[in-house]
Length: 198
Image 1 (tube, helix red, strand yellow):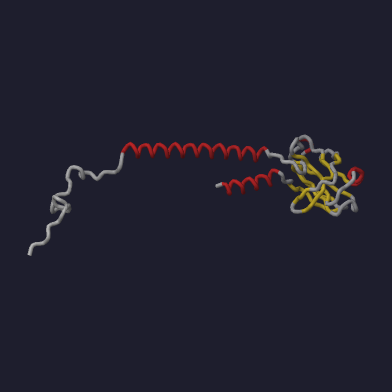
Image 2 (cartoon, rainbow, N blue to C red; image 1 turned 60 degrees about the vertical axis):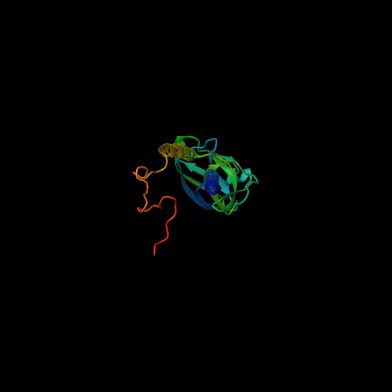
């Protein structure tokens, strides 16, 4: 049981701290992605690169366009790295998708020479743990139903045991009224069988 819970906790932890990749491209290329959620306190849209970028690199060399034109990029770089799809990446900028009017198809590009590979992802801040509301809701319902099922099982088991104890041990009908008689399967009076006569 505990091993199963440990495996589940590991999977849940990996999910809650993972970044969903929506676009991958090389320097000098343009990629497309669709935004259907807004930035919030826990999850944000980010641009990542496979090498640390300076603020000027992001401001002058990278662009994101959405349904209403260019989207603001807030520098989010530094030396801290994170792992996305098995690759080491560095956060470069937070993409300002902040309300429903920003939803829709977007394009992103960065000049060649800044880095070899870029990724756009939606997820928690690197190194932070964020809880997806959908996951929390499903997990919460599963926990409630599991607790109710466990309580019902305990109550049912207790009722069955109490009934069994109140009824007493099983008795063969008629056994007490007709005990075995001599010559009818039981030993004779005295408990010994006489020796055979010659």
